[in-house]
Image 1: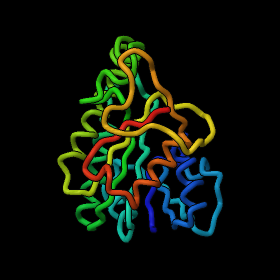
Image 2: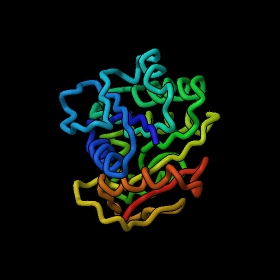
Image 3: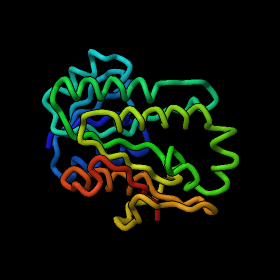
Image 4: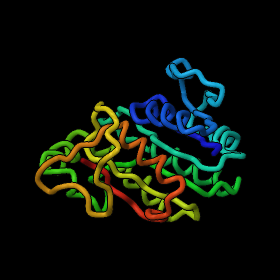
Length: 210
């Protein structure tokens, strides 16, 4: 397939590029700093751009079969709308260019999975450290849900740098009220790619943890 990957320089995005190329897909990666993409491959095109640039998003979305987003940032203490505004631009471009399949990573602890990331995140990390970040993720999810796209929202637990296992739990009631469940970025990428030809979570959210 022809895939657009947004957020390809992040931890999950790097695995997504690597695994998608191994599966034979043709990739376009939209990144702010192309120098951070260390992978070189005949089926990989790296484009410099920003998700807040609506015209650039429309340009790179055109002709794709699907869009996969691992969009994120590290400005946890700053009031932000990067995720929601960027996703709004992605949705607009996809609907205009008639590209329907959208697979997007958010997180457990969002909206109806609010308490599924364990007590530590529920009572401390989310309200104290990542409040603005998670609020923006919540807006991001609501925009996706209200779109006309064939969307799937992937909600990982606490991300790790572990290797791909290929075995993990996924579904609508994943996580724990007490313990913070984890998942490697490599396995999140594996699950995202598996959804390209799987309609199980079409117009649904799925948590993913070990």
